[in-house]
Structures are given as C-alpha cells and as structure tokens.
Amino acid sequence: MAQLPSGFVSHSRKVCNLYKRLLRHIESSYYHLEDVRYESVILRAEFDKNKDIKDLRFAKEMMSQAEDKLMKDLHWNYKKFAESPGGCAFGRDHVPPDWIIDYWDPMEKAMYPKYFLLREQRKKEFEEFYKRNYANLRTATDQH
Image 1: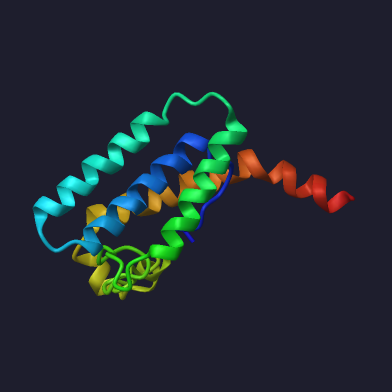
Image 2: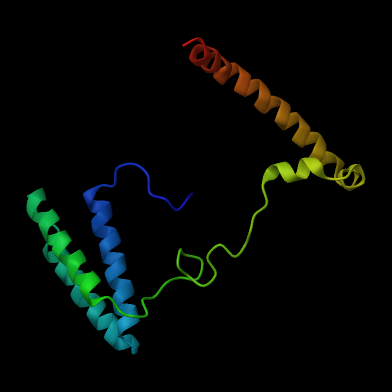
C-alpha cells in the first residue's frame, strides 16, 4: 500500500512528475545518448519557458495538453525501473511480517539473547504507549 498516493498533490509536484515521465519517454524513444541529451535539453528549455506562468487555469490546461500528448505518443516499450511498479523485479523480495519472530523456537531465540530481551522490553513499552494514548478513544466509541 506504500505506493498508493494519498492526500493533496500540489501543481508543482504534478509538473515535476510530468517532467520525469517525459524524460523517461525520451530515454525510451532514442537509442543514442547524444539524441537523448539533445531532446532533454529542448524539453527543459520548454519547461523553463513556462515556469513563470501565474494563471493557474492556463497552467493546468497546458499540463493536461502535455499529458494527453504524452499518452498519445507514449513509446511502446516505456522505460521502467526494475523495482518500480510494472518493473520486472517489482515485489520480488518478500519481507516477512514482524510477528513471525514471536513464533521462533526457544532454542533459536537462545542464540540471540540480547535481541530478544530488548524486543520484549520494546513490546511492553509499546503496549503501555498504546493503552496510554488509545484506550480512551476505544471506550469513547464503544459508549455511542
């Protein structure tokens, strides 16, 4: 769920995202590094030319036109990083949840005594923190 967007995204953030997607499109479309650099410089000049536009309606209209143009011209083999969503290695490494360690055999836990002593202490601290901060909310919602 970490890759899901949440909250408000500012216009400047959207413009930066569009710029990065356009750069990836250029990298996908051209084979030679000189051509990629040339097209990237032209793209940056176009973004710099329009960076001081104060009318937000006009800026949003320009951005929607650029996004439409990008979607229409998008390269068939668009460059994706391996670990990014849609990449060849996305989601490959599974990180097991923390509670799995609680089910270790006592002999396994005995190999790491300091770690498990500190872990138990942290779990108790977290339980106290939770009761102190959230126990009141739970009883207040149960009364309604």
